[in-house]
Image (tube, rainbow, N blue to C red; front, side, top):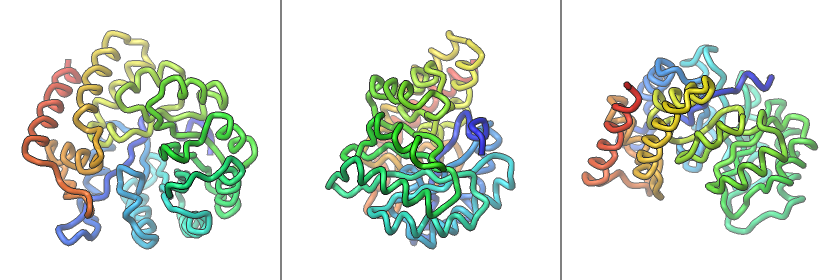
Length: 297
């Protein structure tokens, strides 16, 4: 796997569920086709937007297979691992290594007690031994944050470690990470200000907002790459307004509601996450319409 293989707007897919909370295979495949038609550059299965924390091993394996079949080699596909122990992460990595995935997105353990630096390094090292697939560190757990210096240590010391998805809201920390590991190994996930991430020359983004609005997200990436600052600023502002409606504790439900508002049935989130209220849906729909006007200019 080369650095150019995962570049641009990589979308964390949602996981559609039927009313009895089983995976809706047909809706999952339709979501992928919609995303591809909007021009996205790759996918992640079972991340936090995809409710990976609520999926068991068999479901993650099934979703990964479904995504690979639907994509049929048109763009790269990563699978996510979000578990609470090295043992569980290694087990999933070995299972997923049997599939023709392009990589694994690995969150640090997300129980509330923080591993020390050596523990985090050993965690990623063990996963790297278990699977030959390239690893992307998913820096999303606030109390187990992989600091830039530790990310650099992991990328240098684990042969399969490929890059970092940085979800921290702190742009200063984001810039520190870029300096520590190099922009070509960083993916932005500061959804409300992706333009700032792109301006640092990073490889792209793996951000929930692209799951809610892939076309506008691709348009922003392209505008920055083409040096069209006026269009990029306009898109970034409209995406920021949409992010204000998406960024809440029930984010997967909000992303699913955004997809459904655009004709892509995404179902409800898996319990205990709840669906949006009518007021929340109305505010989200208004922000989507505003973004559509800006995107179509």
